[in-house]
Image 1 (cartoon, rainbow, N blue to C red):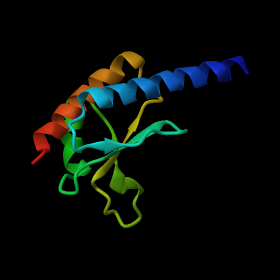
Image 2: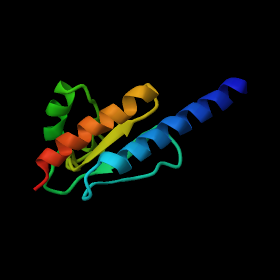
Image 3: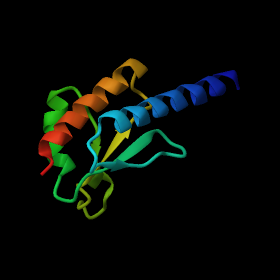
Image 4: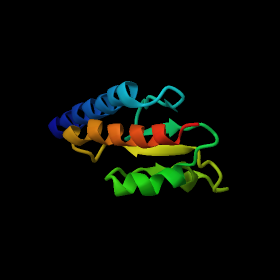
Length: 109
């Protein structure tokens, strides 16, 4: 029970940190959900932007995410990406969001 309380608190802190970082750095046309449970935040990109195209640049700069089409049986929803906050150290979350935000900003029309 004590460990579960620790985990809940830890994951809440990480989620809150990622949410604050997204609010601070992500460009205006980008949207995301506030999870009510789970370990992920979903980012919605403009329809012309493809998460699979952002992935390589992101990976080269040390940021990894899962493309939305990974979860789409028709392999179409490439304007979404999933960020995990559960396995990232708290001191890395803001830096990762800054990098991703910069990459996304460079691809905005």
